[in-house]
Image 1 (cartoon, rainbow, N blue to C red):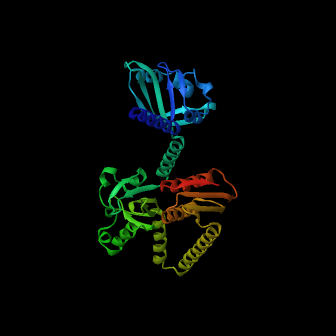
Image 2 (cartoon, helix red, strand yellow):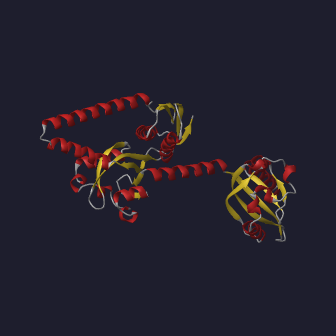
Length: 370
């Protein structure tokens, strides 16, 4: 009675496994002996199309002829199980990624009789991971990025940041962010408040005065973004920045030239130019503001950014900052970028859109173009 119940339970267990996992069996030389429905659905074949065929129908033809593939089967028949993510091809050449195990099955006498493969389809997660890696690599090349613990201890920094500050990674890892600011400011209440706000989860952005390894002044246009755990706890701070030192110094030089001028006429002309430049800047800011559409929550954890008009580097930087801030505030998981209102999508515009989507992806938010 007990033996019959155990047999029945074993059948039920095997049935559940067969419904949830892809299972196929092969002869010792790789000929397909059987495949369950889950395996057939993933690969896109009917059972009659695969039984009697060799396993190589599921792999790249070049790989099928390689020594690595021959060694793969020799290893299996020798009794060594292989567990990994396997790149395979379904019917029609569709790329498929399977997380699974190949193992040798033996009879009651311990003699090898066949190879059993048990796997699950991880194609979607694999492609998303590959896409994310590409996005992160792109933003690493475009901006200076540094990560901190929530108390300001440096975790890592990309090469752009290291080039900007003149340090090597080993020189800054484990040290506090205060190494990049002047001593008096590092001990100020303003600096302490800066980190209290970040630790509380607040996104901070602006133009920041910092010092490099040689003690020289550098100015960064930056966004400090707290990264939250699923429970809403701040686990680290990521800073995205770009160098605006030259622009700041040019503005200071102009101001000094105006102050040093003793010629009233020249001063008047310079002031007129400055006023005209300021008026033009305000008009440009207004135009950009009119063309920009705010990042809008349209559903739980879903943000929409409809773009209208011309997209240049200045506007792209503003959009990126606003997008990162909204993603952090709303903990959005999906970011929809509607480009139907952009008149012309040429290479330059496409590059700006790529930068925006890369930045949102680094925040753990899936970017979609509409």
